[in-house]
Amino acid sequence: WGIQPGVRAVARRLKAADGRIGLLIDPRCAGLIRSLTAYRYPADQPEAELPVKDGHDHAADALRYLVAALEGEAMLAGRGRGY
Image 1 (spheres, rainbow, N blue to C red):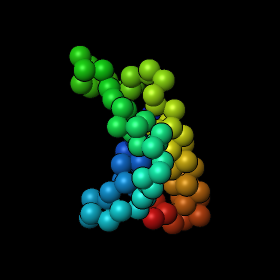
Image 2: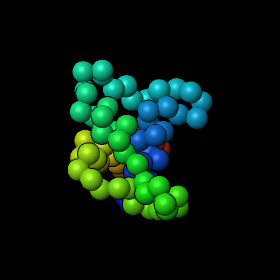
Image 3: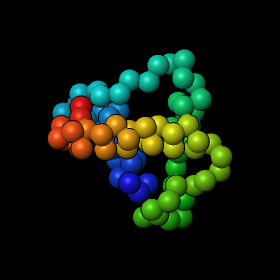
Image 4: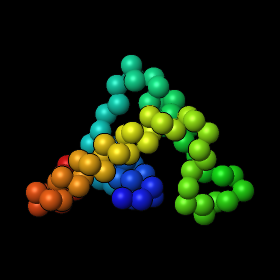
């Protein structure tokens, strides 16, 4: 998985195209919420593939790895995206 497919997978989990929520983040997960809110791409490069790496992205990256692993397991088990 590359960064962009992982970011899209997390976005799909947070809210699917049909409006269904597949991942709910508890308000007590303040670090993750801060990380997701601060996750951004260079302002001068709107088509950039890599996000700004300024240390505030660790929790967002960990969530991306988790979702990629879950989706990978679902694909292997023949369940499509698994949610």
